[in-house]
Length: 234
Image 1 (cartoon, rainbow, N blue to C red):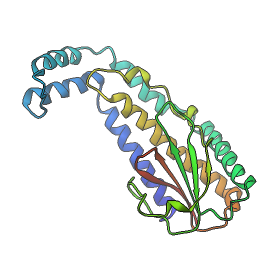
Image 2: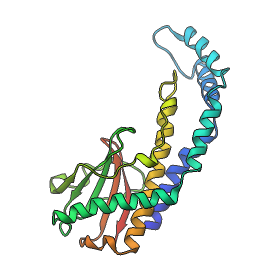
Image 3: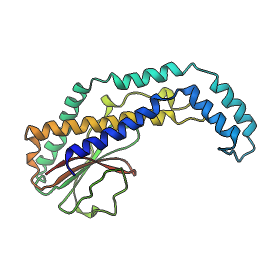
Image 4: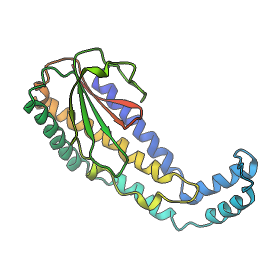
């Protein structure tokens, strides 16, 4: 799989999330939940259906959060991507420099960037030695597809995502909705695109030539979650 294909897949994953979010509002999400419950498409098992219907109907008539939700999507559209790509170039360069300072760059063939929950911005980086690594088109668990005992190096202070992960906390505690998580996912998926561009720039400049084992693969994932391919050096 070449990087043009990786880029296309990353774009599709991010754009599908944005399309889903831009097609709705907070009040519409409540309206949908109300209709699902009322029609029997969703069940409540604690005999609280009548109360829940009452609350959802009231929430669906409240449009006060709709504009702020739209503004948050506008924030995504108005990110300074050029600046963010430059920022991530610096973050990746710092990680690669640390690898080289440890003298392990010639042993490594894959690098996994793993982040924790959204507001814990600093990732860790796990570096693994020579073996076959999976090609990934849809995020999936890959722990059984390579030998994790071949870990060469672990970097605790990896890429920091703070500038690219916009504050979505205002949407985290809305009753019956997980829209805060969905917004966070949009910014996370977009940051993968930014990292791809940063890696591409570093590759074109020759900075990544210090990795000698090829093909060399960069991956990314949330802790204990599905892995996605990020970039590949051939």
